[in-house]
Picture (cartoon, one colour):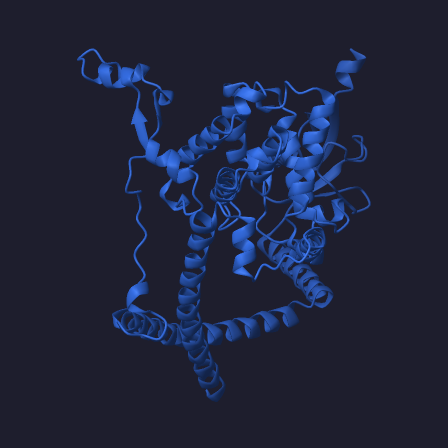
Length: 456
């Protein structure tokens, strides 16, 4: 009983000269208590009330209001419209004072002025940029006309009759693949099941195999899955899979993982990886390097070529060092990219499904790891001069500018490799002259735009 009675409050009110007892729960809300008082007073529930004690002090209407007795009842006074207006005015005055304090504390007026000024500057800048767009479009049209004019010239200084540029072919002039005899026979039958046909039931054509051995091989004609097939063929053709008992399925998984770890950069992408590896493969074939190097060396050369730019972020070492990137900090500004390529390569090898070296003993793997790291670190162009000087010290009286020396050193590849590269260099010079001319025109247009903007 005691606990039940303690959960209720009893308040005595003076209503029209009589004492009114009001009982409510301690858990009632102030709004509920006020409505109860309004009912006791006989006024609408939404009427605002003032509760006064015997001394005339105002009492808060809530469950924790002070207890009273019949001898000291609270007086309930309904608030009139004028009192409400005074209260509203007081409230508005308080809000105004608070707003003024906030304005002084946070400098709102100054912020408004600054924002207004910045908006005006942006509107003016947008107007000027709109005028520049018109000028830029005119420049583009002029450059387009200039290109068409240069292309139409047959006897220009940098485009001779016998060295006209030809458009790149999207597909080679020879068949890429040949179907197996079983597939050919199966296609002739109405029961041929396309769902059971697998990609390994075709192989590279003889023309493709021959073209892969040449430095003039056009990598732009091949899709990523086709380049993966070509890389797989290289490892088989060089005898690396057979000599080192590499699981063919593991080789496929490793190449797929390599592909996935090359980012979609404009240059340092998977196609660049394939170009470098294919050039290494052609050099091994044309220079008969397998007669001079061990198969382990050939495996190191090919694998380093495949891995040499893994996970390239698209920015060079100079940027990494100057920007103090995570790679530069990790490798203490010493060939950060090349060290990263090595690390990613051997992280891939650490996965059992991608480890093509799983059949090597620890000593042999250590030799392969050291060789691959050395080759990948040597791709840092900052070390090119140092490496070239070291090479020259080992080759007495060798002169790269002497064609006779080059012919004597590489008699097998004079016509097959060096000559196509010279032709590529000549074509590059032609394209460079065109590009320089276009850049000069664009530079003059930019200067004219700048001068026009200053005059305005």
